[in-house]
Image 1 (cartoon, rainbow, N blue to C red):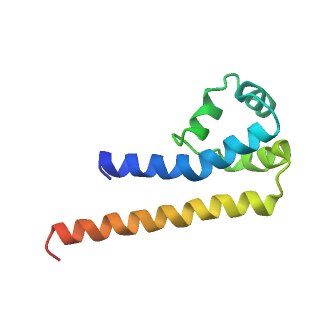
Image 2 (image 1 turned 90 degrees about the vertical axis):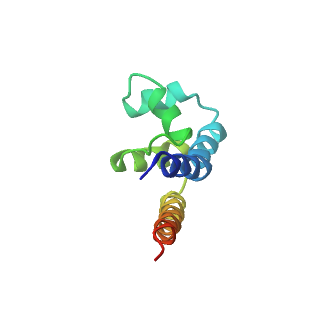
Length: 104
């Protein structure tokens, strides 16, 4: 994956998961520091990274976030599933473009 592909992935993650997580936190009137503390992290940077699309929360953290944000598990699962489906679609287009550039 080249740099352009990575940027597209980060932008997709930010627009889907990042926004979903940020909205959940803001609806609870919580700071990134408060969320990080609840989850046992020493810095809010990890929460910031999730919301900016630089990373995704570890699987073991997702149920805790759903509880903290008051979001039904199915809604959380659907949001992550939607992101994964969009990511696969993006990767498919990138692979197709690679083949086109190779003349195949």
